Structure formats: structure tokens, C-alpha cells
Image (cartoon, rainbow, N blue to C red; front, top):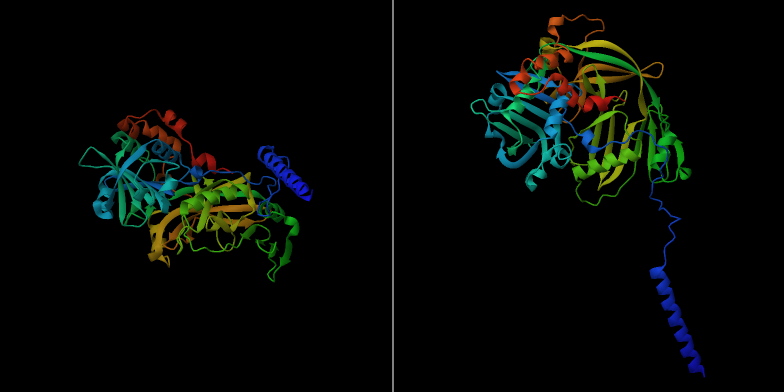
Length: 483
């Protein structure tokens, strides 16, 4: 009798187990409730705008080589810069052939041949350049970083050459199947016919022969509160505690992550300790991750450019520098220890954001503008020669120096800046005093005059369209830089 009871109980348990397996396999899960892990960030109110990688990768300048050792420089924001970049985005570059740097005498090419040189500073990974240019190459090329693209028409032959310069300083890649014509090069060079001439002694530093007309801007700003950033960065702000150090800096922490609020609530530094696994950092992947992180945690204020840094452990530090429209150009804003503004910096560890620092200030639309002139010619050359770290200078460019003024305003003053070999950016010399009168013969013609002149010179030679058609194609940094 007992054996029958045991057998029946066993059979019942087997049937019950089968029924449970059936319901587990075929029942519809309840999707109405989701339990988030404590690693998930809380999605709160939207702060800044979102952006994409193709808007954050662009040359820091373009050099137009006009032949006969004549040159001019285009900076982001001017319509001719946007036109050339827009046209090159629609061209194809294929069949890359690797060569040593001395494949040409580049000093001779620079002096003799007409062309355009796109310069990217410390170099950009090819996988990021593919977001803006149509590039096809082998694995060796695709794994490299490019700091210059030089397109020129050889003087002795009717052919166009396109070279991509590796940031290693030893290698160049020629696109032997570039979708470019001689008319294209003539058109690009024609844009510089009536612009300010520049001189160079080494092919790296270009100085204008005349003063540059720029604008000093005083603009209002708003400030996100540290609480807004706190809610964007911590999964549960309710468990965080606030402490204050001896300098008055506020620090929020949840025992793991920290948010340090500095500069009277205008600057924050977020830290998230990540254990090192010893594996390398992939620069391209880290740039994509950084952009996504900023989109979700604070967003963007105006136009920014990705700036590759110089660091011992390449790929860890990601920097985006803010640009602001000043006169005809969109110029980079210098961030200095005395007043940090105009850049976002992230430190990555195995694809995770370990550090993140940025300003909480957002520029408004109420502005006061004053014409200021940046020195050129001998005055600028002398200032550069007298600069204490002259041997370390790798770039000279116009920029904006930010300073806080009374009444909730920021003053953006044009300066000549230098970039050093270690990546440091510093002001070189300021603008001439406000109210300085500069001889009109020393100034370049206005952008409207440039376009009219093109219809009579450069574009006629290139066989391109009317000036108004050219301007209709213009788009890019100038439109995106305005906050």
C-alpha cells in the first residue's frame, strides 16, 4: 500500500514539473514593470542639445596654395571653407598607396603647385574621417591617424594628386583613385584670390601679411545648477552626500562616484573610478562613447571640434573645444586656469567614462560687438619670435579668450594663440586696442566682394557656376556655431 502511495506521489510531482516547465516556456512575460540595476543612470530633464560625430570632426584650418609661393588660410566659419569642405565630402578617395614622407619635395610642391591643404592638428583616426569623407583603403590605412590632407595639381603635368599624411610624421598615403579633377583644384584655389595673403617659413606656421578684422563679443549666459548635473550623473541622487573642502569646493559623492563643483558653480568635474584591466584604449571607440555620454549628460552648447590630445597613453583623454562665430570666422575658445570655459574633457578607461569635466554655463543671444583688429605682418612675426617657448610652437591661429564680466556676461576677445608640441594652447598676443583705425588698403575685401570677384577670375577658370549658386551650396560650421 505504501509503495502505491509513493508511486502516485512521484507521478504527481512529475506531472507538476512538466506543467511548470510548459508555463515557463510559453507564458508571455509581464513587460509592464522593469527593474533597473543600480548601475543605470536616471534620465532627467534635457539640458543641452545632442550632436553627432560628423559635426565634431573638421579641419582646424585650410591652406590654399596659389602658386608662385603665394598662400592664404581659411578658418572654420568662412563660407569658402564650408564650400570646399562640402565639395570634398562628396568626392571619393580610393586605392591608397603607402609611401615614405620624402616621396616629394614638399617645400617645392608648396611653393610651385596650386592646391588645398586640410590640417587637423594632432591627427584624427581614419575611422572618424570616414564619417565625413568617402574613404576606402586597406587595414593599414584604416588603422592610422591623419593630420593633413593635401590635394594639388602638379605644375609640370595636368594631373591631380591627393595625399593623406600620417600623424607619425614618416608616412603618406596617396589616393590613386581620387574623384577629383583639375577644374576642382582651380575652383578651390580661386576662392583665395582676394583673401589676405599669408607667409610661411617652414610650411607649418602661416602668418598673415595684414591685420585681420575680428569682433570682440560680450554675451549673456545662463548656468545649469549643480543639482541638474547631479541628477543626470547619479542613479540615485537621494543617497549622495555633500561635503565641502577647505577651499570652499563642494563635492557630492555616493561613496563611489564623485561630482566636484568649482568656479562658483560654473565648472564641474565628475569622477567614476574604473579598475584597469591592462587592455589598451581604442581612440575611435572612445570618441564615439564620449559623444554619446555628453549627449545624455549635459549636452552641447553651440559648435565643438574634437581635438586629439598628446598623451603618454594614447586614446584615454578625449577633448572637445567650443567654437563661437566672430566676424567672418568661427573661432576656438581658449580655456585657461583663471577662467575655465569652452572645452569638455573626458578620460576613458576600457570604454567607460572615468572622468568628465565641463562648464555649466550656456551662452545666450544678447550680444554687444566691437570691431577689433589682430596684428599681422612684422608685428606678429616679432611677437612670435620673442615668445618664450618659440621652439615648441607647432601652430598659430586666431582664437577667442574668455573672461567673466559684471552682470552675468562673458567677454570673448580675439587673440592670436599658439599650440605647443605637448598640446598646450596659450594666447600669443592680443588684439590692437579698441578704436584703432587700420588703413583700409591693408584689409582684405569683404566676403561679398570675394564672391563677386570669383565670377570674374577663379571660377571662370574652373568653369564653375554663378556666385549666388555657390553660396546656396554653402553650409557647415558657420551655421552650427551660433549658440
